[in-house]
Image 1 (cartoon, rainbow, N blue to C red):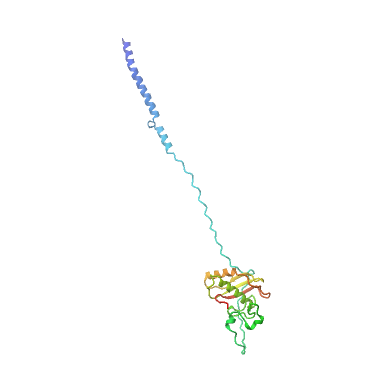
Image 2: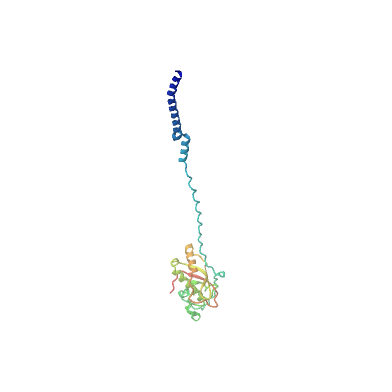
Length: 233
């Protein structure tokens, strides 16, 4: 009787124990497989989601470009660097019975009607070369050659729009080769206007050749005083 009673109780308890065991196994499985119930798996997932790739480093800044300095144009100087001779007026004794002086206008133009025998084909005086142009060509020869060169330079200044309306006198030193080409030019005075002085130097550096060669007995350096406002006539 007692054994039968124990057997019946065991038969009743066994299903209950089996059910409880199955529930525990199911709970453990759910715990292990469910992400919310597994903090380690949850933390690993969160870490994977917030992984951020580092952006590539920025390219190096471009090197600054070097500024190219514009060179100022050099003033053309005489090749043999001659010294400019100052014009020196030598007093001349005038005889008491000297004839009246010639017309100032013709003397200012560098023309000498009384010296036609020594004049060249341009009707320029070969002797005095005075008037507005001083004494001849300075270190460059007689008055005829100096006046011819001065007229050539003055016309070049009057053709340029930057110097066309300029007034006054300027002193220049010019070096001319035997073929009549200008190989050196320098401004020896100033107008008081830096821009005008620069324009005059620019014109002097680009003077066209003369219409004839330099006379054999005339030196290459010619000092001249140019009346920029004077007109030929």
